[in-house]
Length: 74
Image (cartoon, rainbow, N blue to C red; front, side):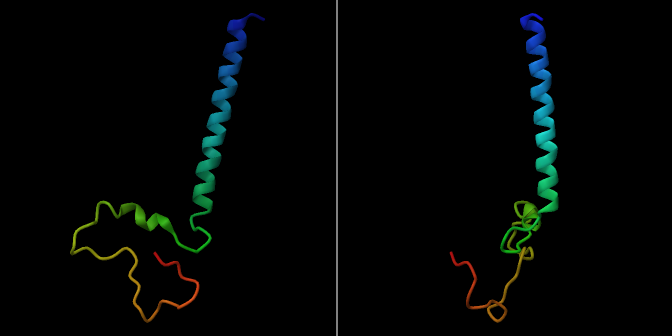
């Protein structure tokens, strides 16, 4: 086996590993849509297109519904 065959097998193995890793990452993203806080960030993906002042908020939260403890503050 010369070096060209070894490089070809290495390239094929690397590409196969990367494709399997990519599909595993995509599967992970779609099965775990919510983070630890229970926020689904997929609803925020269209926020850049709908940023006019007249558009509805992505997630509207009133002061009455917000609990005092356990909420992240900025």
